[in-house]
Image (cartoon, rainbow over all chains, first blue to last red; front, side, top):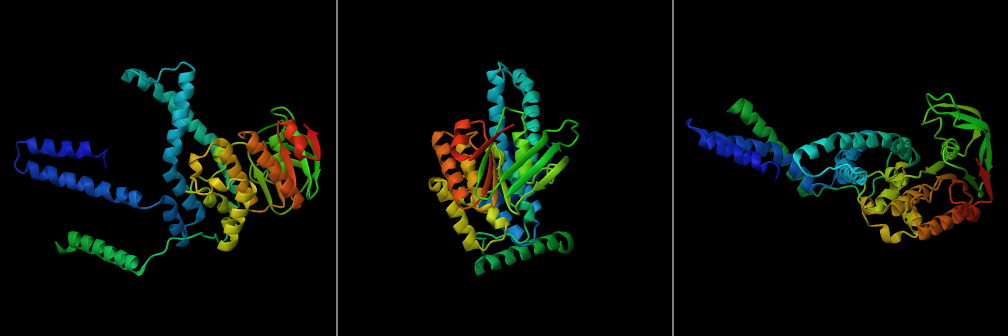
Amino acid sequence: MLALAPVIASTILVNALLPADGGRTFGLQAAVRLLAVALPPSLLFITTRTDRLLVDLERRGLPPGSAFVVGTALSALPQTLERARRVVDALRARGFDTEGSIGTRLRGIPPLTQAIVQGLLAEVEDRSLALEVRGFRRVRRRTFLDPPTDTSGEGLLRLCLLALAVGGIAYRFWLR
Amino acid sequence: MIQLESVSYWYPGSRRPALSDFTLQVQAGEVVGLAGPNESGKTTACLVASGLAPRVVGGRLEGHVSLPPSSAMLFDAPATQLTGLHQTVFEEVAFGPCNLGFPADEVRSRAAGAISALGIAGLASRHPDRLSGGERQLVALAGLLAMRPTHLVLDEPLARLDEEGSDLVAAAVARLAALGTAMLVAEHDREFLARVAALVIEL
């Protein structure tokens, strides 16, 4: 959301400065639309633990392999950042300058990207073997420890939100 | 019992065997060590003895291999052995028994037992991503112990461990052997092998 702030601010400002009629209104509308796109995924990941989400999805029928791929993709960012830090340290230890002017920083990107991608690819087989020995491919019916449960209020709220979403779509396309 | 007779193994696409005419026998409750320089075939022997090669790794195998039904292997790199999906060490250790479909109470009991056996109860509520390499290695080993395999293959289990961690692994190996688990341990540390293994094979 913070990353989107400059885009939203400049959208409003640029449209407000336009000589055409309704520029300010158009700018505000565009900003609200940008927020509408960015807010739902942000809210989801702020309020929901990835592992709990995946457990619930798997309990509702998502195949374990798919759940693992989704979970790995969602949790890959911190691990990739840690790997990038290690690669940068290794590059610096070998005398490769990665800080300073924009040109110096840009020159550091190819070796950094190459090392990260190669490292991730090399890990694929190790991870696959590690999952195999942990019985991942033998899963018939996985046991879930403390699966998320809904209170009756949460279930009702979900139904209301679903009805609201369907109503909103119907209003937008057919009733307006 | 783990039994390999005159086993040769080729990795996919390789013409040179990574393991040649290798014979090994590990009885229930016995610990056999594997020693040798880098590239001598220790990891390959572990992969074959755990049933991962060629079943999962691919490649070609000649000779006779006989393995018990439930096997587990600990690898030398702790970072890739943890799933990265769990918020606590306890959940990470419970991952294997959960996959095997045991009832929740038994999963908890197995995970708690494995954590206790390795002396890492203090880590149970920590996030696996915030552990040191040695701690992660112990968590990975606990994850295997919780599955209670009938034979266990350890490929350089001390790679990231300090002296205290090595002692914990040695104690866990002795305890598992007493329970009847057949174990193959590939390790550079010959002192450790002398402590835990009844027989050390040089590759």
